[in-house]
Image (cartoon, rainbow, N blue to C red; front, top):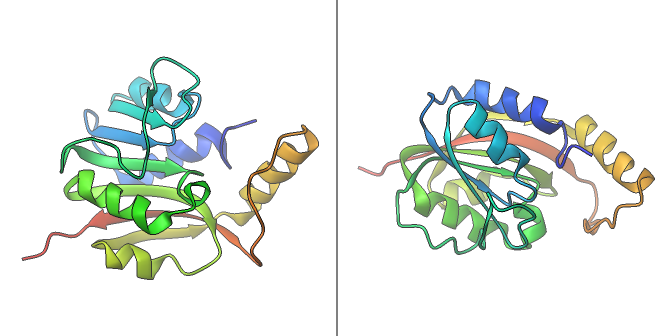
Length: 172
């Protein structure tokens, strides 16, 4: 399995669209097995990752709802398939906004049952890019079922899988 829809190929696409310069400090929220943290480091980023149940030593144990990092610590925050399963998307977005530097970027792909714009705007983000990648999610989900994975996504009606890049707006 690719750990998230589209796997590392899609992560690379998201990073290309974000145009983050090498050396940018990125936090992977919900880093799991650390494969994205490894990819980020291989691409020249300063990367850290946290997860409730890290599976490798390069990912630290941590909660994406309360990371413990100081305010404005990161140039970018990446979350692939993590905010929805936290069951507290508004809190996850608020924490991401808190730890991002002014004009920092949120790179987020996840399951959406509702419009993502209102909760993003509520915590000070402005969307730069939004893409519906539901076909990648369907492929990922079916592969997970086929391979006997324990699926934790509880259906709440029709959903989409979206990928977006948002910038933390600085109030003047």
